[in-house]
Image (cartoon, rainbow, N blue to C red):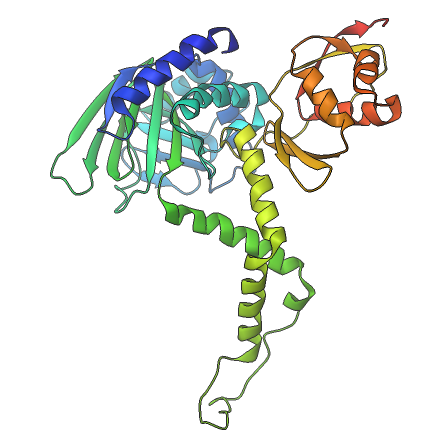
Length: 395
């Protein structure tokens, strides 16, 4: 993806100018992915215990199956063709659809490829402030299992990686119906406010990105953050209590809210206004920006021992957010790292040159001791912000 980044950016710019925020469209836009590359993530997501909320399986005749069991990819299904051939035998040729939500985090290379793919669009139109949803699907002559959403609040990008599909669309506030058709290497796009129904045709494989496009979608994110903070507060640990009914009235005869419930309301309001909540929202945005909105991000890789003679080079953008006097938060690949002092910033600036440097050279240039530098670089390596270039060299 990096080798063609200027061309990719130009393609996204043309796409945004012609289609973004307008009518649904089907355009040629090969994503540089094949069905074999995504099948591993699909199969890994379906391995026991499969997450019911993420894995959905339906047949053209029976609809969605709550427990698809042996109809999901197994250890003997070496590739998507083998899996499709097995289902053709088991289902007697009946159509089927397998979709998996948020599967990319299991495969860093696949996740990073999709991140770079969508980053070109975000550079043209702006970066999403909320997590976007990625979905991989394999289908065979089957319509999507869900009815059109009554008020769809997201915009959608769907790449057809193999086979073909059609989509029926009903934009809000119009009497127009669209029907889009796409084959391998095509991109289907529709803005927010479109109800849709998918129809997967022969040997179809897709990648779909769904982007929240209405302000109300932020409520779920903020509510989840506040709920997590409330459960960490000692004031939340008490029991709701048992109150008489009717509840006692005040001197003026007015009945107030039950105190245990009112106390939770005050705790919620206090945490919402707390500077710590604003900081957490700011840092989660930094992590999301570094992931191009794709959450969850792949976990950090295992630590490896680093020595002064090893050569390293930056492999991802380090997105920096100030975090108080002398302190900053760096974000890379969906994760954050807090740093203090001026020396780490000198390291970051040297890494931004793209040159391969030994750890010893980085220490000299940043005036940072090996005892402080090596743990920092170890963290960056775990976050995949730097890569080891070659063996132990001299400096």
